[in-house]
Amino acid sequence: MMNGKIALDTSVVIRYLNGNPEIVDRVLQFSSVILPVTVVGELIFGAENSGKKLQNLTNYFQFIDACEVLPMGRKTA
Image (cartoon, rainbow, N blue to C red; front, top):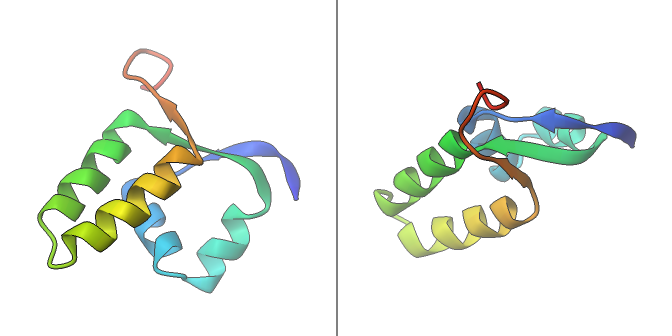
């Protein structure tokens, strides 16, 4: 495991949660995952409008809770 952080965008989070082996292996090399708040919003919006709403919301919130979420601001930008 690398001592460091990695920031993920929405498409990478979805691929990670869907078990893409290359993405999973890469993400697990880091000690911390960062999610900009916009990514959190996109995940929740997508889950709310999906055919598996409850399952996706549960999975996404478990993942989000394990990450560091960055608020909007210059640092996030």
